Amino acid sequence: MGLRQAGILGFVFLALLSGCMFPTGKGLQTGDVIATAQIPTAPAPISPLESPVIPDATQVLSSRVPITGASEVLLTGVDQETLSSLNPLTGLLVSDPSKLNRRPVLTKISNFPPEGRPHAGLSLADIVFEYYIGEYMNRFLALYYSQDTPKAWPLRSGRLIDAQLTNLFGGILVYGNADPRVETIITRDLYNRAIPFKLAGCPPVCGEETHSATGVWVDTAAITEWADSHEMDNLRPDLTNFVFDAAPPSDGIPVNTVDVNYIEWNRGQWKYDPGSGQYLRFIESWDETKTYPLIPLIDQVTNQQVNYSNVVILFAEYIEYSPTYHDAVLWDNSTGKRAIYFRDGMMYEGTWMTVDNQKPFLLLDSHNQPMRLKPGTTWFIIAGISSTFSPVSDDQYSLLFSIP
Image (cartoon, rainbow, N blue to C red; front, top):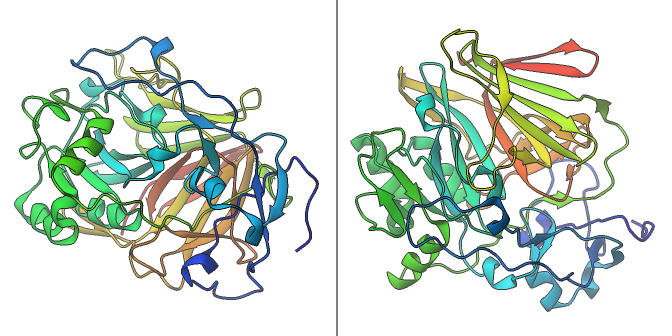
């Protein structure tokens, strides 16, 4: 593959680095391009809170720095210092490379009951996973790696799917409590990389009554300190499966708005903002009218609307053991399932795979080649395999969640 014009980011962490092979097609080979650049000066990251007080927005400064004007070099010519500063989950250089010398922290964040809104800390995660927990409700699992939040809130219970996601991303799981059946699986699969509320003090996990929608919050930087002080294996994992490119693929369909519907009173929406190049999150409002209009989702920590660079829908098989006891099949997906990608106001069809249960998903485009995400953050929606996805208008599509 020849070099592209300077200024186009081709940050490529390839499956070939871990020995993975793409199922068909040429795939990417050693010698393909990776972009590098001098790390721009960036503000220092925020310090952990000493008490459960939400800081002003001006105190929250991102340590993630987009690469601009990057020149491309061969993969074989990238020096180790540059590689150590590249976040494999965002495709961005970080101003403090030491942040990447640890395991990601994955924190459970509740979406129901609505008294736990607006959420705190969703804007500061590199990745958020959204999935179904039963009775038409969803929940979030936020992954913090290149930076932290002083308050991830509200913390809620662990679910079966959390063990799979935490292992796929080599992380540490923080949760409030868990059904004994779930606790057994989480402990079996993660061992001491699972930190429930009952195990950790304040900090890193503060508050009371983990069954409350508003009772408990997490300082994610303090989780890393707690892990180090308790002799946990907290070494940097191999997360090199995603591919990033500042230039969007040419075969996308213009789509400005993506609706995510579970039921009338549980809806979300992503709307592309050309000015910022980000997708803005809207959520249903609970008020006395019971009409549930969509309103901007404002993060308590940043006082800004939650926004992400990429939105990805992964279709997966859910297993329902009871109305509030579910799992989803994420591991051992070697044949591929449907994926829909949104970046830069465009929609792309593709597939996703897990050929290694200890590595992130492989994200493939419609040509069975690595899907090139936009450098930045990604919000994953794990939809039931029978969910419908259909157009509302020329530039708006709607996902209606369903499981068999």
